[in-house]
Image 1 (cartoon, rainbow, N blue to C red):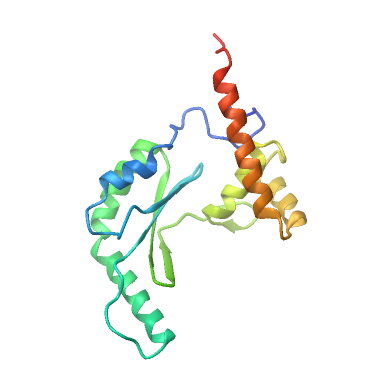
Image 2: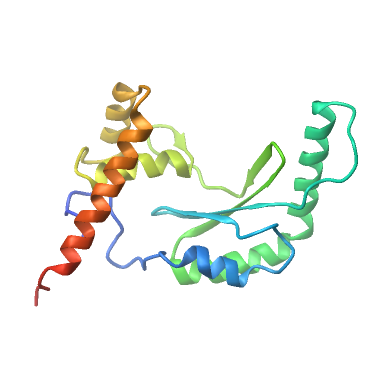
Length: 185
């Protein structure tokens, strides 16, 4: 099995299909009316996370706490009412992309994730944290998620997000250049 984009652990396994079209697939597959627009679709090695914005609430609320409670209630209702359809869509997507599918919904200032994976890496991390570690491994900064986690803990600072974005852009450019080169027989 090929590991990583540069051969140093942690990249997409050779037998796992790419999920570059996942956002478009979900946009076409989801029932009309579930969300106000296309959902945010985030993909890593283990999981596809689909988070959509629900229709705004109508009416006034006594205060921010009441509004937050109403938003949370609406998200819970969405979760219950769409459960069977989400399970079927997730089954299809899991077959297509060979990754688990997690769901979430956002309404106003409230966002709730449900059915998300928590993959062990010295501690339980959700997809955004795993994505940071996978970026460091794929770029060769670390040899494993555990090493990347230790490195990230030492690095924590104001400019970490900017640096990781620059690193992802550089990796994309390297992949583009690699794809332009001659193929190996």
